[in-house]
Amino acid sequence: MAEIPPRDDQGYFWSNDDEQAKRNKALEDFRKGQEAALNRELVKRGISTQPQPTDPNSIVLEWAMPKNIASLKLEYLVDPFLPCKCVVGFFGRGSTAKSSFLATLAARISEDWTTLWISVEEITDWITQRHLHAGGDLGTLAAFSYTATKRDAQGRATGSTFDVYRDLESSIKKAQYEASQFHNPPRPLRLVVLDTAVGLTTWGKGESPNDDGSVKRLLGYLQALAEQYDICIAIIGHSNKGKHDYFADTVAGSSAWTNSPRLSFVHARDRRQEHSFVMRVAKSNLSSAFGVMYSTVPVLTLHQHEDGHASVMCKADILPVVWGDADSMEMFDDATRKPDEEDAGEGSNHKRQTLVQQVINYIVQAVYSTGQPVTREMVHERLGRPISRREWTKVDEALSLGQFQYKVGIETGNKNRLQYTKLN
Image (tube, rainbow, N blue to C red; front, side, top):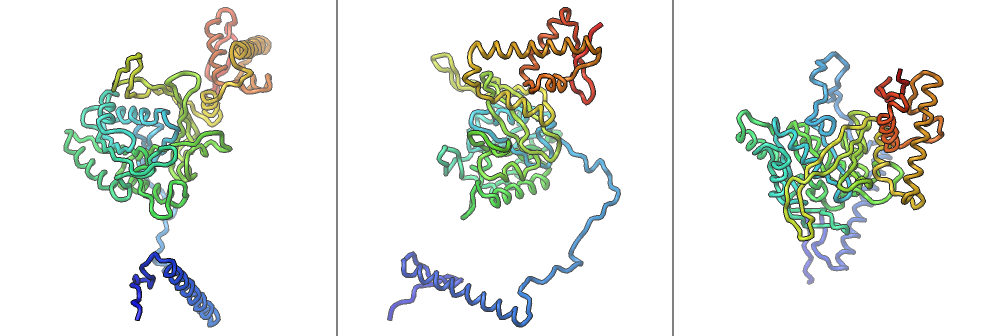
C-alpha cells in the first residue's frame, strides 16, 4: 500500500511534486465549492451570512465641545521642515543631498534634543562625524548602519539586516534610555531618520514598496510610533526620472509614499549652479505649499584626490523659505528646467536681457504715468506671460542698482507681495 504524503494543519500535502500540487489545487477548489454551497443554503433559509453588528455600547464618539486649544497646537523641531509627532518624507534622485539636508537639521536641534539615525546608505563613522563637523553637540546623535541584503535594478537597497517592524521600536527605546543618561539635563530623543525606508523594511510575501497597501501599512505603523514616543520620523526615499502629470508622482514606487504622510518633499539638483539644490513640498496637510533652495558645504574630507578633487561629507546651507504654491513651483521649475537648444549660448542671455529690460521699461512707464504702485501680477498681465523668479531677480537688481536713473522703489504691499513705486 502506497504511503500517504503528510499534510499540514489545513489539509494540504507537503510536497512540491506536480501531481501533488494538482491534488492541493483540487482540494482547495473543493473547499471553496463547499463553502459557496453552504452560503447558498443559508440564504435560502433566510439565515444571514454577514458578520453580527457591533454592539453600539462599544462605539465611542467624541462630540464637539470646548477644549484647551494650547494642547492642540502643532509644534515643530525645525519650522517648517520637521513637525513633531509626524512622519515626514524626503524624496529625490541620488546625489541631491537629502542626507546632508537632514544632517543639518539634526545638528540644528542638538542643543535641546537628540537624533537616532538608521542607515543602509552610509557607515556609522561618516554619519556621526558629519553630525559633529556640521555643528552638532557631542552625544546628540546615535547611528546604526545596516547591511543591504537586496537591491533593485538601479542598485537601490530594498532589504537589509534591519527590519522596521521587528527592530525600530526597540531601537527607539534603547536610544531614549541612553540619551537620558548622556546629558544632564537630559536631551530627549525627538528625531529618527530612516535612510532609506524601503531598504530598512522587510517586505512580506506579496508586499512591495510599489504596492499601496504595503506602503500604507508601513507608514501607518511609523505614524503610530511617532505619536506614541513623541518623535518626528524622517524617511529618505528615491524618485523617478522624467516628467510626470502630478508633482508628487516623481517619487518612486507607490503613490502612498507621498499621499500617506502629513508632509513630504521632493529634492532635485539645481541645474544652474554646481552643488546647489532645490526642495519643494510634494504634499502637506499642515500648511500651504512651500519650497527652499540650498547648497552643500564640505565639512569633512574623507579623501583628497591627486587631481585636486576630494571625497567629502557635507552640511546644507539653507536659504529662506519661499511660500505659496505658484511661487514655490516657479522656483522649482527654474532650478530644474533643461536649457532649450534655441536658448543656448549668447542668444539666450540676450533674449533674457531683452525681457528683463521690457519689464523694467513697463514698470517705469506705469509708475510715472499713473502714480500708483505696480505689482508683478500687473506686469504678467501686460506682457501676456509669466516672468520667472530668476528674471524677477535680475529686474530687482537692475532697479536697485539704477535707483538714481529709474527712481523706482521696491516695497512690500498687501499679503507681503512686492510692488514697485515712484520715488519722490
